[in-house]
Length: 359
Ligand code: F6R
Image (cartoon, rainbow, N blue to C red; front, side, top):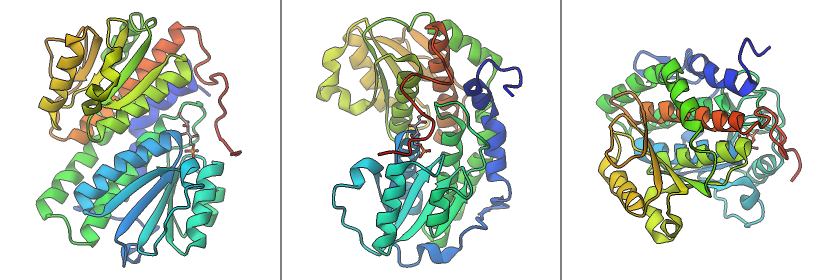
């Protein structure tokens, strides 16, 4: 069943390019985004989007919040489902409530969905499992079509969720007349290129294997990025924690100077996400600050950076989301190879279950 791969996680990382193509199939036609599952009434009267999810799905939601505001010009906030449940949230009917879940069974997310329904909000679930508790409950479902995900550490679920949410932001943008024809064309052109960005090259995989030797000891990792690369940094840190049991934190790069940089020394590994097409100079100056405090720096970028100790080169593209997806693959491979080197069970990490159906 592993089709020659060592682990399900490895197989699922490699599958991403194909499943993302499946996920987009029929949903991009000419210069238009179409979802058979929904129609334009879903956003009528909507002034705000609220997203609720847990773990990796929460990171997809955070990524989407940048895209919804930037492209669809609709206010969007994201809440971790276990926090949402007890904060006595204010819910108004001009809010579209979106839950994101690979399994459709996560207890906290399901409860959040129930609360939103009871409050009379329109609800939508972005889910990988049809006929799950969430798809049965929500008003609308968009399936991510990732296929069964066996590795406990989520990989292809995240890439397909992110692609669905990006398409959805363009769908809303178009429906609300908030996007120019040129921008829409540019975005759709980039979407079509995502499967290419998710292809795992031998060179990239070898590089992460080689680097995994260096990044085993030390007192921790900072994954840093800006904008959508901040949720990607969170996701990179979560992957590493889950399967390598090493301490890792994801941070918005601009926050480092507000405290965390005090930890910087050579034993502190910084994994810096440095896309060429989004805020490059800003993140560069954050990395310079960390380097000046002797942190060991690994940069992931299409551009070489003289201060980095290690460098994983990504392809040049003309859209930051394409850089996002290639960097995602790099982060997944890196955490997997570190876990392998430490002798851990990649597919069944300790203390974790694939689906968290209790609170
Ligand atoms: C991380 C991971 C978890 C899940 C979380 C939500 O690799 O797998 O953080 O993302 O438990 O699960 P779903 O998406 O099924 O609601």
